[in-house]
Image (cartoon, rainbow, N blue to C red; front, side):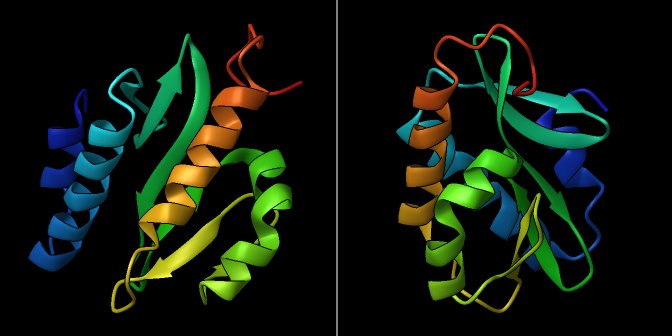
Length: 123
């Protein structure tokens, strides 16, 4: 699997595929400088070689992984959006709206926080 399209093609439920594609298009339109990357069989966006945000599909939800720092910074907003969360990711149920503004804020935060980062993951 090399492209986002390859990843999306693995999703068997058309509505899940369409929802993830909508999220990817929105992020690409808002942050055209981000690079799309498939790693560990998951779609993610990077900036200057560093991880910004990643996604995966599960039976009941889309998982969003902004690294632990992103989770800690936005834990209240994630809860207010009605999403469940762990230390490393939050879950957007397939039947719940995607909070695009929250995703934009998380991405902007990670880009700013990692502007000088020269590694893929935060140290």
